[in-house]
Every structure is written in structure tokens, then in C-alpha cells.
Image (cartoon, rainbow, N blue to C red; front, top):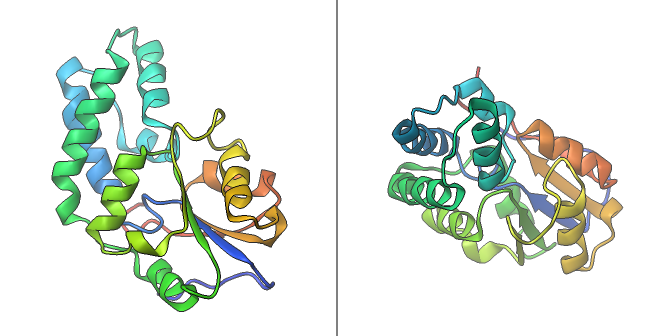
Length: 196
């Protein structure tokens, strides 16, 4: 499926990673479920998708608050990350987005802007063989306010040296679309292959 792009002359493409470049949301959800089961913490799939784009540690903190749990945040993040890494070989790229990456690579710079850790992002991109296509990675820990705040996208534009209004964002999550809009950037919504 070819994703239609908005009209305009864009000087950079900014991509979310999970669910946008890499069809990894099912693997992420499996990693969450297997990890949270250790603490009998519910995490319905609909909520997982609603919270797409949030940093992992923020999700654990919120789940603790909502369920009166005391899950150790760093431990849960590390175990979820390890489980996700084990599942990575089963991921694939999202064809409509890969087409635009192939088409524009070498003409304009690319950045990945993700709520995932740098380790998860690099492993995901490496798993589908395109890590070397990206000039900049902005991941959890590289900003203070996550999506839907515009800070992550504005940081990527700054690192690429491109004005925000000249960036085009590829996103699958509502939080990411909100963040791109708040940053003054045009956005393309990437449909989830397996959702709903």
C-alpha cells in the first residue's frame, strides 16, 4: 500500500519507529504481557494501543498508580526490553513507509523520533536492515517531555538543521500526531496493519 503524502516541499522526514517503520507492535504487546504477568498487572491490548508512543518507564509508573502496585520501574523496563529483543527476529517493515524511505533516501535527511529506548530503536531498525538510513535518532532519554509534547520532534528538527515547518512526520499513534501538529509539522498517519 502506497501512503499518500501531503503536498509541499519537505526538507526532512521524521519517523516514529514502532508501528510506523517496523511492524513491531504485536511483539511489544507480547513483551509487555509476559513481563507484567509476573506482577499480575492487567494491561488490555486496547489500552496498549491508546498509550502508543509513551515511554516505557512512564507506562510502568502509571500502571503502578492505577493498580496500587509497586512494580520496580527499572526492573520492569529491563525485563520488557529483554523479552522484546528476543521477539525481534519475527518483525518486518511496514511496506508503505519503507517505500518512502527507499524513494527519498539520499535526497533528504531522516530522523527517528521514538518513545522507545535507543537500544530498542537501533535493534528494531537493524532487524529489518535499515539502521544506516537514519541521520538522527531521538529516543526516550533524549528529551524531557514525551509525545504528545512537541519537544521530541522539535529536537529532531534542530539536530537535522531543518525548520519544523519543513519536516514531514510519519506516525501511527494519536500522541505522535498531536506532537507533530503541536510542533507545526505536517503528518502522515500510518495505519496499524493488525489493529481493529
